Length: 346
Image (tube, rainbow, N blue to C red; front, side, top):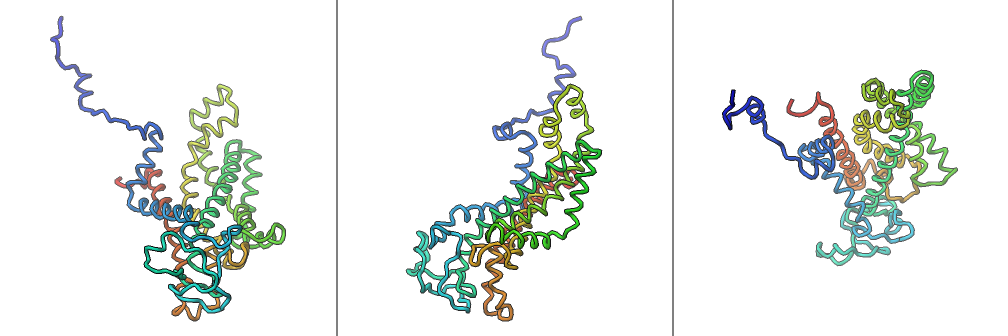
């Protein structure tokens, strides 16, 4: 029995109904899952706004010396002062006492002398300089705290879930002991204890925030690993004799870490707010350090007169709010992308 040449077969008819999708260089480089995450972030309107805000603050931090030239090269984070008068000056006031170097971009304003763009606080600290250089402080605080809390939380949660038994009991009881302390109050107390020991600066509050900030990550990663460790590829790795360390870091953590990373992206803004709260209370950094919380703290004596001196709260408060909003929008978009139940379009 002969078959006519060129006659369609059932297999070819079936394959013709599908169209081959071309895989671009970016998708090959990142991998299908990472490419899907990146595409979701760049196509989600809210996440685009968040990425734009984050990019803006990163650029401001990088080019801070060009945007607001420091008057003290040895201590660029110290905000310059225009005298020592107690009354804040409004935006646009001429800088009279030892004005800083005029930046290259100032010519586009059409003015010759340097002025206080956002005004000054009580004590004549320049708000514009404090907000621009405070961007570096915010990024340093947020990324440092999240990096260390993630590492500690992932290590403790992974060991607890993977080994179980008495290891799980001990590590989870330690975690619960730390969780029993109110976060901000505990960080405030430890930071106040550390300040006389290691001196004023950003490190006492950073150490305190890391000490009392890792527990949520440990519990989340533990819950995810409890389900991942029972899957077939983990059991197969154990059967063929793969070491526990390789199983944890190669197979378990990469498949359970996404919910933890989503929480971390949203917590960067919260860390900056907590640091600002500690600075507002006078814990940590030196007086005049470029930090948004300290800029707001200079407005405490002028709260009854904020209708007149609104700028000493609005400008640093707006920077703090937009910074936090950017990270929260990106975190919400990541949650929608990573959780199948919350993906848009379903």
